[in-house]
Image (tube, rainbow, N blue to C red; front, side, top):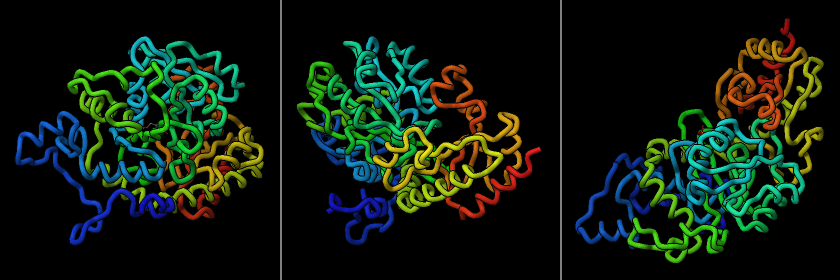
Length: 426
Ligand SMILES: *Cc1c(COP(=O)(O)O)cnc(C)c1O
């Protein structure tokens, strides 16, 4: 039945269906372990012959319900919740890419992802070539090597707010026979479903809009079940895994091979699991995702238009402003709204921008986005400060850029706050 539900219904009821007499609300199974009567039952779990929970590093009923809700919202075959968005990105790659292999990634990434790919994965022996996401298809294809194992991008670039050209990226991925991995954090599964636009794997920082209230750090990986791993490039999915008595993931788990492997190998070995309590909070957050994302999108567009008309503002960027470089892609891929993030520059540059931030009363300076409360940050001196100036420009971070995560307070009050902060610039 849940297959035919609309997103708002999945947000509220997906993933958990209590039986008669059970708790109406998803319970928190705060337990590391599970009781069994027969050693053979546990043996079957260890051999992946039976489904069930054995240890909460690998799976847990509260987490499983939340994973199922996200998988339904994204239209995937399964999901694995992990300790953070950074972990989701890391595992999504390590699951199919090892030392000596290579990735192609859009340069317009979240700062933490950029350093993960360019610095830390490099130490693991995984090479990355960054590309301008606006480059022609042939240019992108030229960056591929024989050992390239994935192409990576973000639905809404952070903080450039460029919308990914799903058609082009998925065409490249298909041609080069590698999976297309998309970070869908800012759009959320309510506003965009990359798997329906040619992506194969989706990752999220659940810390942002999925939580929605700035309470917990978490990440999640969703498998589209729509990639043919049996093309010679992914032996770890097609050849026997000696740590599970030689099972072959594709043979045994079919189109869920990737996500099963991420759980039973990487969660088992690296231990970067989510907590049941955080899964409970993410599930609670998801219950209003559809309402919040409509409101975040509405407020952000209203504020963007207000700022565009303000004499002390030098520029404004929001995907659904006609002036945005990827406006037509936003119209195509984000018909229900472009989320709550906008960026702008104050006349007077960096110093005036800092004064503007000091002047705000309702909006707060925080290192975060996707909260119900409006927040602002100056990326060049904070989230992207570990990048060189050229890397900052390539990532879409102008020196005077202020990033706003527009909350769901009454938009009239948000505008009033920005109005007084702009008026009181020295
Ligand atoms: C925050 C963020 C991440 C990292 O997520 P954490 O939960 O903070 O580890 C990754 N991608 C994007 C787009 C983000 O905004």
